[in-house]
Length: 271
Image 1 (cartoon, helix red, strand yellow):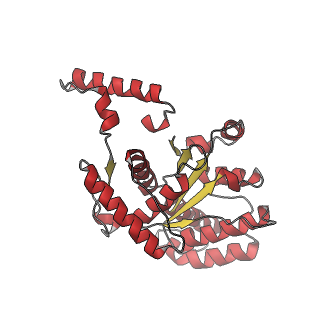
Image 2 (spheres, rainbow, N blue to C red):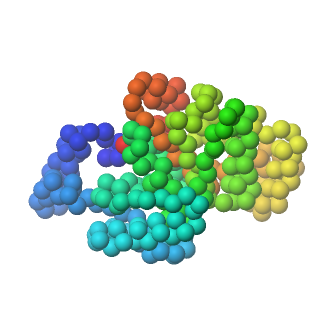
Image 3 (tube, rainbow, N blue to C red):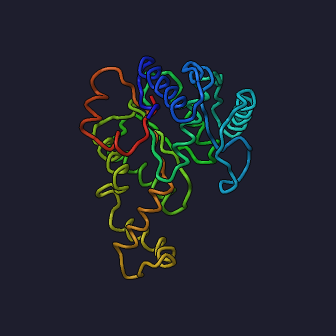
């Protein structure tokens, strides 16, 4: 709930309520300012290289250690990435990267990051994806990039998640919205996982033939074509995590949230 609050006054009011609840229910007096200076941060990535199933979700109490761990993750990311990323882990950056990592680690977890351009939303998302051991996928805008090209990229994304079963973060920003139909597809992906008319009939058949043995193991009949495709979509939903980066400046953000309700309803918002 706190992640959705947009200004300092609201956040301070929330801290005040936390302080009151602490003294009322736990008989412990806590100064509201403590929540600002020493925020409560949880995560499961303090042990580098630990496999997904062995990770412990715990509170980070030692900020210095957390800073060092994040710096190690960043160095590790820069070794494998063609484009070097330089980040300074001040308190806000640590909070946000922990939040993004938490959101995408949840089953079917999607995020909506709201903030003006240049505040590090994309960089922190790439790092959070690396921390979770996920692949980060982004569309590349070229001259003449249109709705058809966007569908081709979505097919690649569905192949990676539904067929190759690769945990993937799809990072999409408001500067990449060439036509509003892009958002309509993303709205559908967040809501049901399915994009209407994405696959041609031959591609559809190809997916069914690859996914059929796996679906059979999960109790879906080989003859049930719709059931097999539904199983494929459920795999996509499980492996795909959409992170949208939006700027609140101007009226377009407000209009998009009204037109495409899944942007708000199916995402965890981090302002």
